[in-house]
Length: 331
View 1 (cartoon, rainbow, N blue to C red):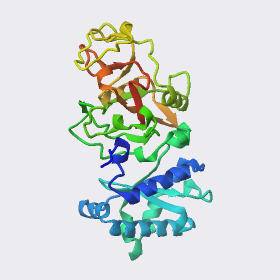
View 2: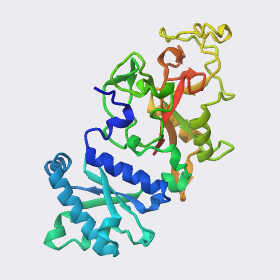
View 3: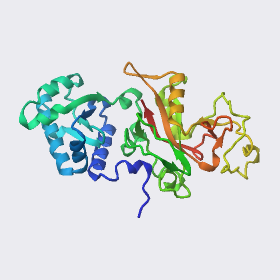
View 4: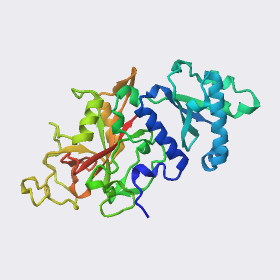
């Protein structure tokens, strides 16, 4: 049996969703911008939500009605409307208008609901929220950095471990996958698994703000390609390192942090710390709105230096040998 990675987990139980996700990525790669992609939330009740999520035939019937209705409302061929990425909770889907012949200002929740009185479309009146996803349009991330299999905004998991450390899920955040499968260790993806294998890495978070001296997309691209760089603020430098699993590099005795934390790049196993840092250092403006941004990453367990005074701070050397971001986070 093959190893299931953290990126694959979100879609491995839904082959149809996986195929749609690949289609979405293809449209992005071909220049489709995110203002034509919308998240729609339907308040259908728990029983109906579960039926749509667990019964592919019912799901397709509902999605087909949605495509037909949107086609009528916006005069767009049904084959140019993609409904994908079903999420639990309220029944939530992403809709992509795969055509340039579309005015995004036409999308209005009340108009859509009011025009669903016909029996065929009556269930669509349960639409309760519609909003656009702005990350691609606002941050202009290069499509060759992204992997839609890593996209997630729910189902983060509870009471689990990664790399032997407790995992704290980033609830209420949206995650956009970075293209990392096969990128490191000669293609060995053990580091990003969630099956407890000896080579699995722990999960940590790193908040980013707009006061960087360069843009968010530049920061992301630089980190994706070359890793993080240690900053000037080294508050835990002289603190005792309490990670008993820490292993110094025998080839570099000057960087032995068995006793003290030393200089490095800061991250945290707690998403609240990411949020606090992103808020303190100014939010990022996208299309006139303020967003908090950060990275979800894997860090090598035996290279983490943990401050005795503040164990929510982890310090590593910042290179991809110790820290690997695999999702950009937005809230």
